Length: 159
Image 1 (cartoon, helix red, strand yellow):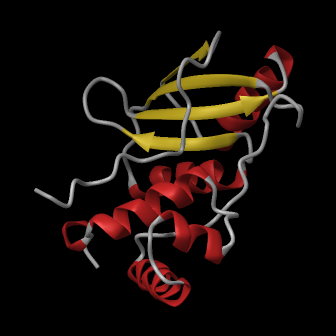
Image 2 (tube, one colour; image 1 turned 180 degrees about the vertical axis):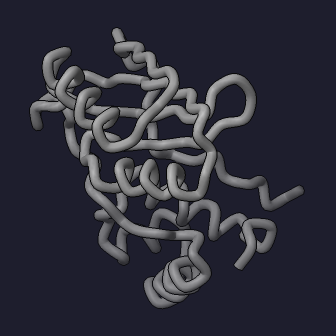
């Protein structure tokens, strides 16, 4: 089901699930003004189509000892298939990396990293560059999260 096939009810279901995926089916159906079975069928269709990828718990990073958020900027001179495979493997194996993005422009990659403190970042940095060579790496430590959400903007079905 491509996103342009979503109707108003699908979007309401998605909005509610983005706020709280633990809602009981009866409560969700009531919020979106559907029967329980119709709501369940729509959710199953959106799961089967890949619109709903997973239902997860959002954890408090600070309470789990990884309260320092770091934005890591990487440039590389190596663009071979072997280097990219090694980098991809390192990114997937290092649990501190919570987001990794290949970029256009001056930067090659941006990583979002979660660690406990600057010493833990230093250990992460040393581990990363031991796994894969980079030509330039810099980090910025997040001072304040002004907005940090998993909620995606939903299409307007009226369009």
